[in-house]
Length: 174
Image: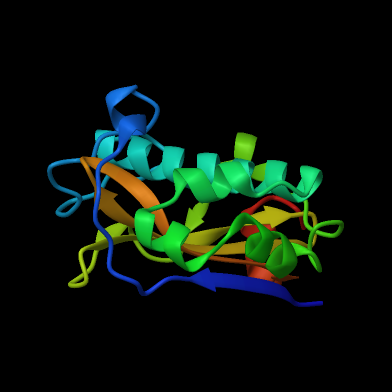
């Protein structure tokens, strides 16, 4: 079974962030490059920010899916994401997966990174990876843009697919 969903924005943005001033979002790290530690053994500040962003985004999406209210997800996202997506549009877009996709694994498990978190030439922080959920993989690809000193959601792709036997074995499930 493959269940996939994507929301992307391309509009330009402007404006500040009261959320950062209130301490509700993590600050943009000065550098998210270079030698990276193994996230299974020790976490750098950049690893902690990446882990926080994945967990908080997926848990916010999980709350939105459970309640049908996407206002908070939208409000925490970047201005360009907000401009491109109303709460109603998000509710419509996620309606098909609302009852089938449990994202709670993100609260407790360590994600497996497909690639190290990195800032691309487009100046977006990209976080791509998965969580193993029984015999399936919860895949995610998230992009964040720096807005008023905080990373805010710019793009979200979430899907569920069968896990390859080697990933199940690596996760201790076979």
